[in-house]
Length: 362
Ligand SMILES: Nc1ncnc2c1ncn2[C@@H]1O[C@H](COP(=O)(O)OP(=O)(O)OP(=O)(O)O)[C@@H](O)[C@H]1O
Image 1: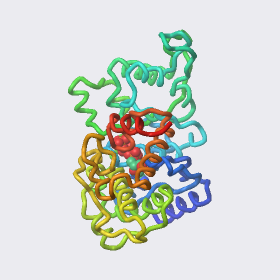
Image 2: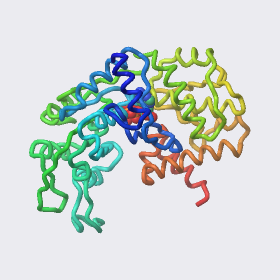
Image 3: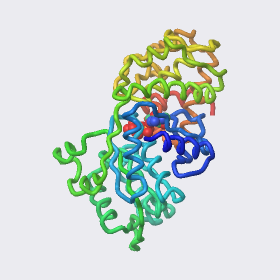
């Protein structure tokens, strides 16, 4: 991106308006980090990231379907929102549905809606995301996880540009721009018979691969500084900075969990540093993480296991317990009480969330 364009982005973001403004971004997994109007949530430094953002900017003003691919935690959702808010549909709705988070029947209702009495439990009419996103953008997150029978229905909506609610007879015309994301190889899913080939070609109009964080190492320091500021604010602790040595340590790691993992590492560092104003290498703990952050690293491990996190801080440290409780409860609230989504967003198992909730006072 040219300096001029970059300045325009920063200026418009600071003004809270303009072509590159990314509005209402809920960028952080931490619930206390409320989306801020006009905040420039996109952090980039590496030339590779600029290239990807340029591609996103090229496709944004069009109505083309975009397929965002890349490992878990690389920022596919944030890119989808960026594309929407940089498009002509920016003043229209942006709706997102995670195809992996809902059981097939719930997903069908969430996508297409249902009429009252369509099935037992359908006590009222429900308007699905296709209708809610009408004239705007619909993000189909983790589209590879959509059951095959719903894929056929989705294909029909895309082709015919109309939707009918479950149990309904009416067809409702919809004008939707679709952005789909996947962290799996969709072509392989097609070869394995898990994903319809015709739907794949409908979605794969403008494929955009978001590189892993380790492929764009120059982003690490910028992201780390940005998120330390946000984390201190959200965890309600005094402002902290990163020492040069801590930054070096952060830059020396390969982040299989990408930016989500970096944020978790930083959250841990902020908590572990307690009253210190500067985060040092001793506060940076990567743990045995794979694609998903290790549960014990987050201090949320299963109740039956020894909690290393708590041992280091003496079991029952009220402040830590309270922070953890706030994080879980606020995430739960943000995702409408959905424990599966909450667990996914915090990188822990549903069982962990369930067990923790059992222990909290009503
Ligand atoms: N360029 C960026 N600047 C600031 N924050 C970012 C950036 N990219 C990603 N993030 C943050 O990293 C976290 C993970 O991003 P996101 O949820 O978009 O990833 P994803 O690829 O959709 O993950 P998954 O495949 O697991 O759903 C989010 O908190 C997001 O706000």
